[in-house]
Length: 401
Image (cartoon, rainbow, N blue to C red; front, side, top):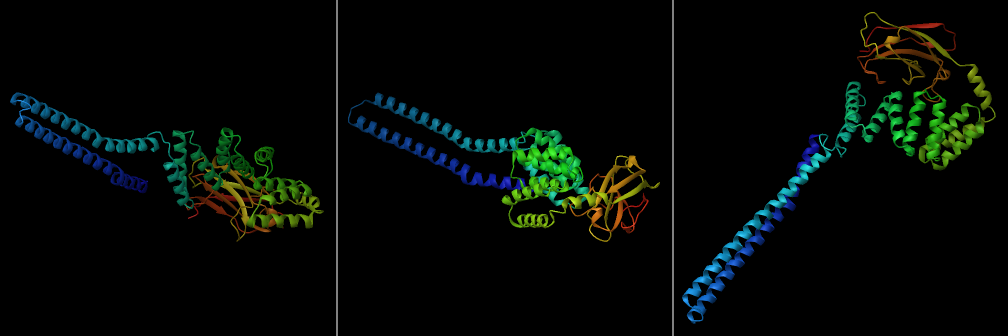
């Protein structure tokens, strides 16, 4: 914020130097020239009257009367010049001052708030605090307060929705995108964002509301690559390889670079396995893996009953990406939950894709997905999914440190 006002001050100084001051100086010069001209005319006229008096064209009384009139005229012209000079000299400064005052009032938060300085600063804060849970939470609270003051600030709301989605807070992201979609029902980009947030919120399952959102997005923009890809995945999961291939080919027409390469690879895979897709889908459904977990809270843990509890499985000694995830609150503990292979976060990263996993239960009092040292967490040992298991018991009692 300080840099912004320093920049504004520098621009004001430049404006005074190159615009206001030359106008002021030009007014002084023109006024001085007029005064000199009036004095020269006065002296010339007096000289003419003296010549007329010497030649007896006028008498002494007439000479004095005309001389007095010339003096009064000179005084009157001088006063007019002074008034004109005063008004001219004040006008540029007054105009410049009004521009500064009106600009501040128009763009500042305490004025009309027409600008996006505050939004820009908040977006910079979000970028700088992305890996800092506490800082990120504080910035998000600032954004929410800004929206309370300016509920029609759609740019800030869009920034908030994007930020919630980047933090895996898909319910909050979907809520904000839904608000924007309702305000701008013909905006295809917003419709795509909303559909994507819903898809992630429903754990990448094609629920009726997800399908409806994707359908509406494609109605607004039939060429959107992301929505065509999601539709192809939906068709593939239903065993409709032909429809999936058609949708991927449609997306490939508009894709470029690495994304086009990925689509070509997906089409190649579909072509090579198209006769087995239905059977593969049936086999995967009959061989779904699951984990039953009893999550409890340690007696020494003091936390807000509304604090979020994340329970998820991840590859053992590998990627930290959840293979299956459930979210609940401390008030719901103890709880018996089931992690299933159909609740995948990313295609190809589910319980069916890894034989050795571990379970994590973590309390996030800030309610964000990014882990912080202040969070309470418990992590299981290695679990072999090729072997049948009963119920795993996890007790959350220690901080991550």
